[in-house]
Structure formats: C-alpha cells, structure tokens
View (spheres, rainbow, N blue to C red):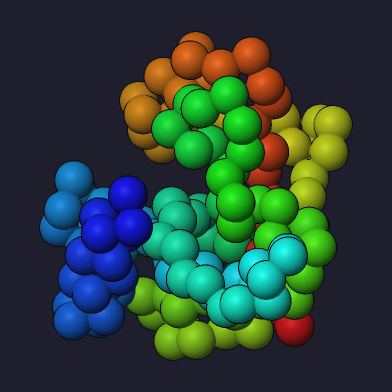
Length: 136
C-alpha cells in the first residue's frame, strides 16, 4: 500500500493536485499527520470534500476494512495537522471527529459522491468516522 500511496503523492505534486489514477481528479488532499506512538510525520492521500472556505471533510473508510486507518488514530492523538490541497496549497488544520447527526450528514455526502464509499459501508460493521479538517 505504501508504494501505491507514494505514487499517488508524487502524481498529486507533479500535476498541481490533479490525480488521474483511478479518476481521483482534484478530489484528494495530502494529509500530513504525526504518528501517535512514533512522533514521525507521515503523509497520506485521502479523498476530501470541501465544506466552505476553511473546512475539508475526510472519511476514515480504509476501503471498508474492519479497523480504522492509522492516520485516524494519529489525528485523534495529534489533531493539529496540515493538508496539501489542489487549490489552496498547504494549509494548517485542526482535526475534529464528527459525531451523531453531523457525522451522518457528512457521511451522506461521501456516499452520494462515490459508489466506492457506498460499498465500503457494506463491507464493514464499524461506523466509518468522518473528520472535519478546519483551517487554523
């Protein structure tokens, strides 16, 4: 997976945020997060939905796996992060896990956007977290 992620990161950076692989287009951000245990900075490409001028929504879907992605755990421990965006460059953000109706409304935006997200929901019994990344 790390080779695949690295290729996506390189394509994002080489093309000003546009990723043709798998039809991502300009729908990704590169999430810079700090390892919960190691303190090491990591970068993960994640699908994002812009929610106003200062907020991006990301879903910890992990392709419908039974557990959350490592970046989700890292954001819970270290909520101050950064994202590289197609339109705004690098933005310092603070992560907040959405709960209840706010989460459900945001998740509906992901499932409306992509069949992939609808299928992830069918593959797992966990509630897929949605995180708001708000400009600091």
